[in-house]
Image 1 (cartoon, rainbow, N blue to C red):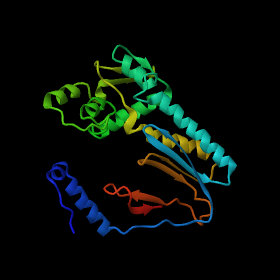
Image 2 (cartoon, helix red, strand yellow):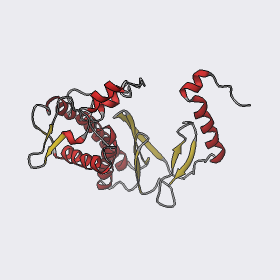
Image 3 (cartoon, rainbow, N blue to C red):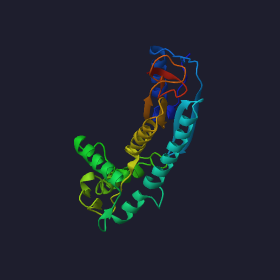
Image 4 (tube, rainbow, N blue to C red):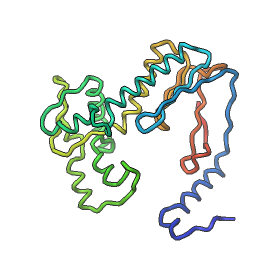
Length: 249
């Protein structure tokens, strides 16, 4: 029997999302886990508003030690680049770059330069300066709201990577207007996952699965006891988080 929907459900789109979820369940069968003979250890820590996890061979002490070291590296990046920590490099830039050039470390400068290129390539769809809009719409505190046109126009005044000057020779960042702010949320986790994977690979860890939240993941080698390379990853149903729609290797 179909569920009865209320006026509130309709206004918030709940009935529509439930219908879509039911359709997905009908079209895509549930998938099971593929078992392997080895033992996998999952080591994790919270960071960057997500959970970083590393899966390694539970019998490989070297891999386990390397995984712990990599998670320490994740914490270092969070301390340096957090938008919410007053002592972070990003907060220092946001506080001072409108008054003059701010010198930044090489890895951060290269990330900002890459982000500026992505902003140009996507016609502004990828934008590290979108924090004022992000906060205006209530996403920062998960308090969704619809702002008025005047508030949006005011926020847009300080949004756009063209308002960020990067001096490669001096490794400095400068804002063209007061109120411009950088937030690495759109690229930071992926960058850190890549650096951590490089560290594990360089350290001789032959098989691992590394994830930063639900959006960034790197796999290398095979799980313990598996006959071939490749880690099986389940794709979560966005409308029914307790279910999966597929799996990838």
